[in-house]
Length: 594
Image (tube, rainbow, N blue to C red; front, side, top):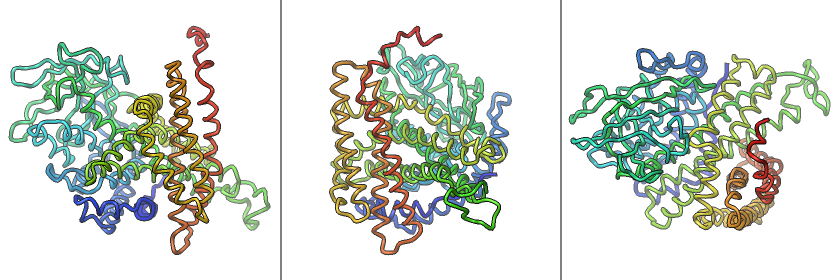
């Protein structure tokens, strides 16, 4: 039976010593009352909830799965009780606007709590998260719609799934066929089908407020003709009470290889009453507030599942005895040494540890940008943070999920044959992780977004905001006794990142396929450099502490491992990035079918 322990000491270290968020947030009047004591207390309680309430339903929920009974989704046993406690605890309200019932605390808290929930039970965590839906409505809808729908969404008693994908188009939303027919009362009749809808229905709340992309008649073709609508499962009366059942239904539940406790639905809309969010034909712009939050959440899933896999693999490696150390018996009084003495086991654990702790810092850094974009008093800082957020979101989603996939597989490998057996829980982590590089836009989609839409389209301006920050850190740290060499290596990798970007940009002017050929490797290169930046900052913060402890020593040593054995992966990526697309595109399409 797997276990989970919330990494509270790591959160405190990152927030206090690495990101120095309390100094940063002190300059934002909205967070003037937020203290380390408040943040620590919230995280400690959230950690207890994840450990004691959410984690125990993970394995049982996977075995039981969701059911579709009389057209209604029934979640696994225990989910309703935990959801009720989660809502009563105010966790859905934490970082939301007090105007709509939120507590107004920093979103960076969600950056930590989201990881804990996803590590404890990702299937449940998806039901518990609705901040993306709230953001899409709050930033785009009329005040009337906000007042009608946001308080119950923020309270948590209404769900908020997004309904974008259709069977024929996947991520190409310009091909959406769902129709929105204007009605005399100002509403729209929504007709069509959506698939892969996480939480399209559930028995965990009173209502489901679906955000649906659809096309109004005579709208332009493609992405420019898409609008966004609220389509509630139950219509909402003027006084806020629930009215008649809307014309929505669950056509089927998807049968998945993992995340069995999370209902992934085929949703049908048969002239369902919907309400426009934002402007006609501006649906994608409105939806992106939700998409960015959702992509950040999936990036957290990569960290969360890698974290719980590492915890269990490390405990197993300390206990499991097999063979002797190559350097001689470590515990000669025992029949064999624990497997953690073997270099290959340590390699697997350190790859996991270096990714988990590095991406945790990366996620919290990214979460802090959401706060600054909303609440900084400096317009220039807001603009810089928005550029950083736009740049880092596809890296967070794409790189974190790919590395998370590598790490859960390494966690299973540490267990050997025992990892392949259901009772130990490791195979569930692998199955639950596999969807993350696919949904909310595949790794390829994230990579094209990063390289094409963010880096090249901005002529490198977004990238320069980050690389300027990294190089300033390297310059300040070049004489540091502990991380001086790391800073030099990070500086060189950053320079190379910029040079590779110019190389790809020039190649793309000759052949547009160069962008697609380079994009995934470019995303990986970017991710390795960003995590190197996080590790250099953590190593410096740990080395600068007045008292050295096992925790701070671990940070410095893991940082050195990352620079010695993980960052060099960029050398291979550099070669593939420079080689171009010729061999990739040369083979005739028919030759792939043998």
